[in-house]
Amino acid sequence: MLKEKRKQSKDEENDSSSRKRRKADLSKLFKCYCSAAMTKPDSSPSTPQGAYDVFLSFRGEDTRKTFTDHLYTALVQAGIHTFRDDDELPRGEEISQHLLEAIQESKISIVVFSKGYASSRWCLDELVEIFKCKYRKTGQIALPIFYDIDPSDVRKQSGSFAEAFVKHEERYEEKVKEWREALEEAGNLSGWNLKDMANGYAFSL
Image: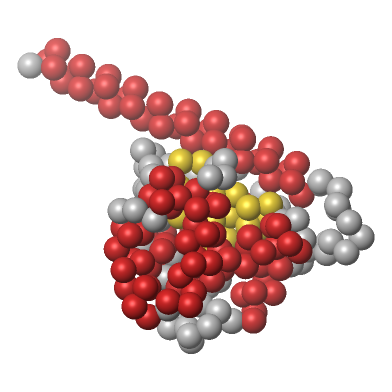
């Protein structure tokens, strides 16, 4: 009995140490990535300097009180000027001009994909604007974080994303094509897969 308890305790310690190492490695890589991106020379004279270093796109209902909150705090504490939409009130039918401008004026957009991300048409509109900035306007860097979801679900719109699009096909038929294209593009980008990690309570930069 005592041996079993010791073994269980040892396994728990190893598991905890493994999670901490993964988070530490992720934090170091993320910090280096952001630093390099924010010091990257402008590709053209028309590229804006950027009012923000980072724009966070996320589904508040899924991650506002967990991973995204801790990520935002870590970014701010690291001196990275970060935009996060704190408005939890219901929005109108269209994405606000305020949010569009925040995306356009950011050097990096971090997209936190969660199971409910695709159910929000405003998140999808943000994603479309992010890729417009990435490819046609400012050369903005887009960085996906796959939180509790497989990148293939984002890329192929399967799983919970498929369920969301069943409803979108009925209500927003004119928007669906560009949403799908943006998700496919995002799912093919190099990013971080946090599907097997904890909720991010110990996330630090």
